[in-house]
Image 1 (cartoon, rainbow, N blue to C red):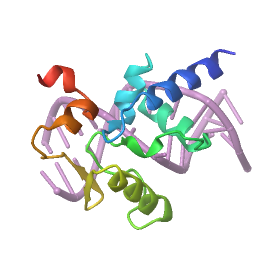
Image 2: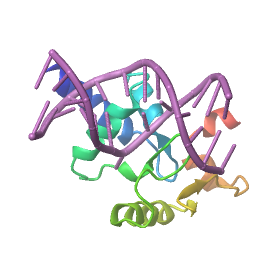
Image 3: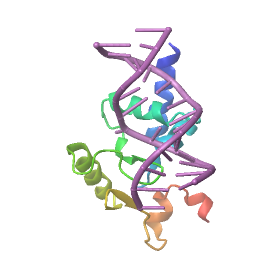
Image 4: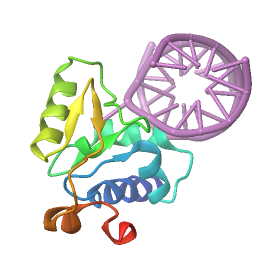
Length: 115
DNA sequence: GCGCTGACGCGAT
DNA sequence: CATCGCGCCAGCG
């Protein structure tokens, strides 16, 4: 039973990543109460079905997409990220440089903290 | 049980 | 920036 609980915690953490923002495997693990277990997050993600799960918002701590460049999944992830207004260059998500506007305030990951 | 394999991460070199 | 080593860990021969 415990295993499924943990998987659910991870899935929930991923669901909480706001539209237009990204997180990392390690960060998701920490948010799920599993510090140091980024690999587990990767595992869980690889098996989960994508029924509305924003899996594309999870990147490596470097900001790189974790799939082999050019692969089918890599392209799909880049496509989804861009559809959320993020800039993806060389397989890496660049931080949004847009000046603060209502949109940013409403959707930015750390809007509260940046004010 | 043992070694290998990942959608990983981080500090050191 | 590129590599290495080590930590982490659930499967699958």
